Picture 1 (cartoon, rainbow, N blue to C red):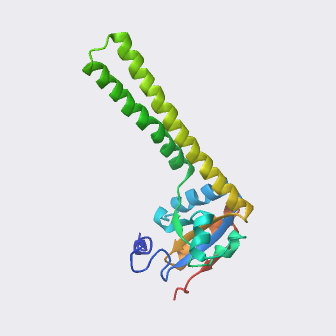
Picture 2: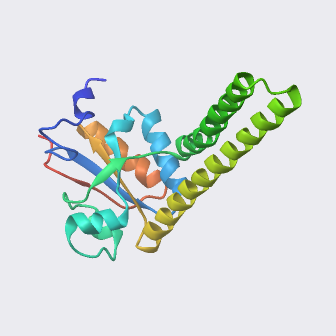
Picture 3: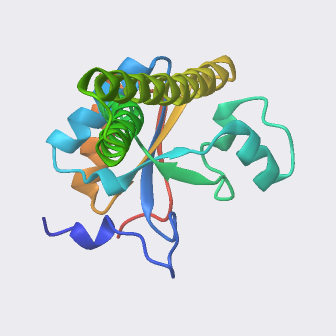
Length: 196
């Protein structure tokens, strides 16, 4: 893509730099996800899409309470992060469950082999440790899922889910605005220096 240099952030420019962005608010995560999927299908890199950090982190950065997410749309001081879709979060939670199970199953098998346990003892030990890993991993995965849902609810209560999309040409601007509106984006607009 000829505009690829516009996708990647550098230490000099930071996440906003002097780049142009399309901005939108969404009422639901499904609308937000649909817009991001559509953007990616139309040539926008996932590096061009960003979201605000958690509200408490933003409040610390901007030094005042955030009553409306809409107030953050054009504020360069708002800390951002890459957009993580629902599928990636689900995969992350699965890893949080599977890895401890796998490690503890291996540990159980190693302990059983190292101490010469009988077969039934080895099975009980290995399965028991695997279950402990599943419960522990499941607990942290549930906490992660709850924290993510609470964060979305908090943003929605303060006006919506905010999304920024960096653009590098007039064609990309028009395409981004059209896609954001198509998926129920609200207050859709551009900010940053005009492209000449």
